Length: 275
Image 1 (cartoon, rainbow, N blue to C red):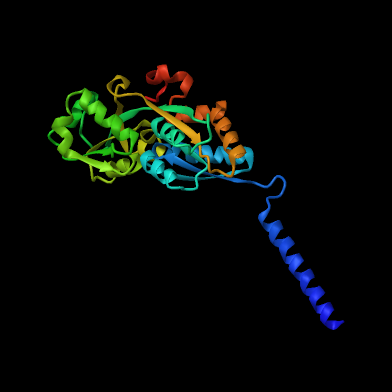
Image 2 (cartoon, rainbow, N blue to C red; image 1 turned 120 degrees about the horizontal axis):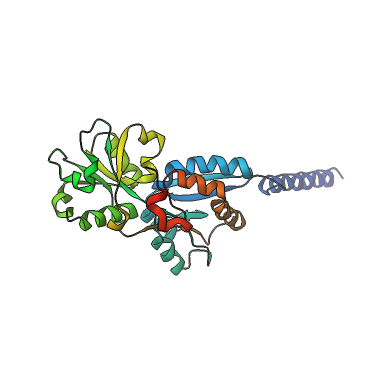
C-alpha cells in the first residue's frame, strides 16, 4: 500500500509539474506579444520613435535589429528568425518572395527615401554646390554605404555617375557596412563628407552636428522602400497588424517627420522632405 501511495504521489507531482510548465509556455489571454523586425539602417531613428508609439498604443513590443538590407536578405535566406523585414528597397523583398520565403501578397511599399550630402558643422565646404562640392581639393575621404548590399550606397553611386564625377572621386570613397555606419564615419571625422539618408540627417543626433543639402531626386533611381512578412513567422496576425499600424495617419506623420515620403506622396518627394 505504501509503495502504491508513493507511486500515486509521484504521478500527481509529475502531472502538476507538466501543467505548470504548460501554463508558463502558453500565452495567456491579452498577454503582450513581441514582434521581431529586421529594419534597414536608415530607419534607426524613425523606428525608435515608432516603437514607442506602437508599444504604447498596442501593449505589444518590437525587437528591432538594424543593418544593411542586403545582409538581412542573406540572413533571412539562411533561416534568421525575423517576423517582418523592412528593406531600404523593394528588390530584396521581391527576391525573397520569389524564393518562397515570404507570406504571399504581403509586400508593402511603406516609403520613398532621399539622399543628401552631409558635412560636420566645422566644415568650410559650400554645400550650395551640391554634389560638385565633393570635388573640393580639401576633401580626402567621402563616406557612402557599400553599394553591394546597401540601396542607399547604390543611389549614391548612381548620383555621382549622373553628375559625371564618380571617376574623379572613386579613390576617395570609404564604404560603410550600412548607412548608419556611413554616418558614423563622417561624424567621427574619419571622412570629410558623406552621402547619407535624409532620415538620418534630420534626426536630432545629427542635425545638431552637421549640415546637409539634398541631392535632386532626378539624379538617381527612386529609393522605393518595402516591407514584407517572413513565411517562417510564428506571429503572422501580429505582423499583419503591424503593417496596418504603419499605414495609420499618426505613423505616416512620424515617417514624414524623418524625411520619408509615403507612397501616396512619392511624386511630391521634393516638397514633402524637410528643408
